[in-house]
Length: 209
Image (cartoon, rainbow, N blue to C red; front, side):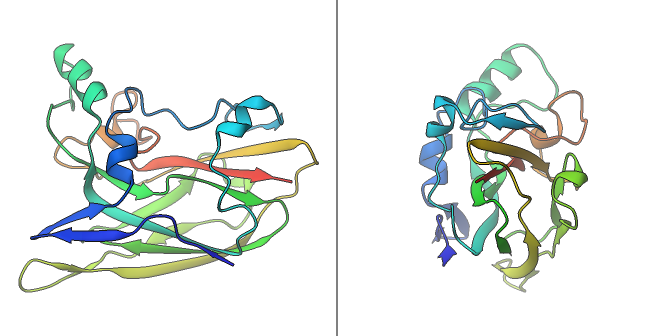
């Protein structure tokens, strides 16, 4: 079964990410849609019911890299008002969507990454030991003479780690390449530390039994 949540649309020369704009534009903090602890196996609690589990059980998952796709209205406004570098109001940010998805423990998964940007990106794990062998560098889209981008696909196949029934494993990832220009907010969680905000070139792979 293949999981494809988001669709790509075009308005003039611009690219929009259906659902991602409406679901993320009002998010004030860009936190992940769960409260499970990072980098740990955690007892499954009521908080996990907040997760979108529609990808659970899929052996193929599609994600899309889309430049200038979402607005973080409150986050940008608060940062700009405080004079923090990288925060500007009215800008759109790059995204890999869905940024958080759920997979089944022990399943063999093929991840398809479609890049609508002409820059290289990655899904790099905070802790590579959580999913051994997972390493995804996403090839850039092809820039055409008229300025449009022909998306390019990069795939990776990996095996989800095994977790005990009733537990979940939160595997944070981020894009290791400088992106989200011109603000580079996605690179500036703490002073340009190359760990983006969840939802802006960073997210989580959630493993459930």
